[in-house]
Image (cartoon, rainbow over all chains, first blue to last red):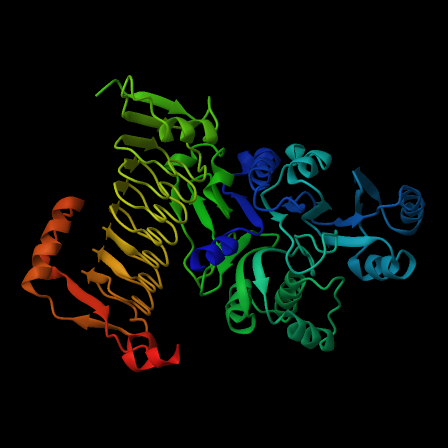
Length: 306
Length: 231
């Protein structure tokens, strides 16, 4: 019995992260990240998503939006161009990245008021997020991840356990500017925590446990706590299994709960840091066999690009 | 012994490679194999049942050498979760580190890990000898029933929690002992056993008297004969 139960714990969702230490490698991010997601299909065939960080401009904000209805998308495009300053819109499958000088304070309330059906997947000066239901292999193709460049990226392949297979239930979750979270595991106190966070003014789009964790993290960060401190609090306040990769515009952090049922492996060399649920996901990375390969210790926070 | 046969994951898939190892040709009697480009694939060399030697050149995924009988497997890299799970006999030798649950439920044979083993090493082991030259993570030898776990480095939290008859030899320190696990006196018999394991694992710089011994205090519910009347 024991080993069967453990076996179930080892599977369920795949997470990946890739951070480049050298600028000249930025153009390769999409290529390697898509390979990593593709290799994690076996752990999560239900849906997939990824966040790519690319600091192109310090002025413009990027809003990643999911608009399923084409007509609505056309209507929105026209109105956005009139309403906001200096608008550029990029369309990939059902996702639209709105790039504008207008700040979240004007854009987000406008969207929530006038376009209820548009899902705000994420926003920030650096982040672009895409997620969809289906096989990870098809999803990375639809969003042309291979063509993306950036300093770091995070991805997730989902095997749904506690909420429906929908875009709402897909990772990464972004609940703050340039923040995102992917999670392998399941939380048991998310309903309680959600209620507490709602009282503090946070809002949630789904019943998913990871969204609560993401909300918890951005709530802490908005109180000017450091990412390190925030994740330390996670160990205290979050109950359940988790391996997290939490991204910010500077880099990302990895944390495993203290029981550490959920796997993670890190490969690091002078060029990059790669994190994944299994080594398999990073086997295609250049020179990985000579990289320093280790497992993150339970309850220890690892950060890159502070 | 015939010539060494090379099995390449760039040319063949896992099922083909495993099946050719599980059903070796007795006419040409080839028993020396090299596996190339394993790329972290799962269940490599699972279910081998004859005497042979397989060298894997690279990192392997989950359950490498699972259910192994008689085969000698040498991994020139790291191993993923569940290395040699439910192994019956034979040898598995990892040059790098092993992930969680190495040697889980294994009944016999020897597992040698040159690097570190992660958490739950030897969980529920049932007779295997595991030699870890580095350190092990938390909850190692959890509910371990028989066999020996030798650790040349340190152990994480809750070593030997709810242990049965497995014996743990530890050269370094443990963060904490699990429930019902206590330090025991090293006897002459133990010293002989440790010496033998040192030889098998080719452990350097350590002598039998460097090791402490841990085992079950036999205080838990299931050790109390009075509880038999509950059934």
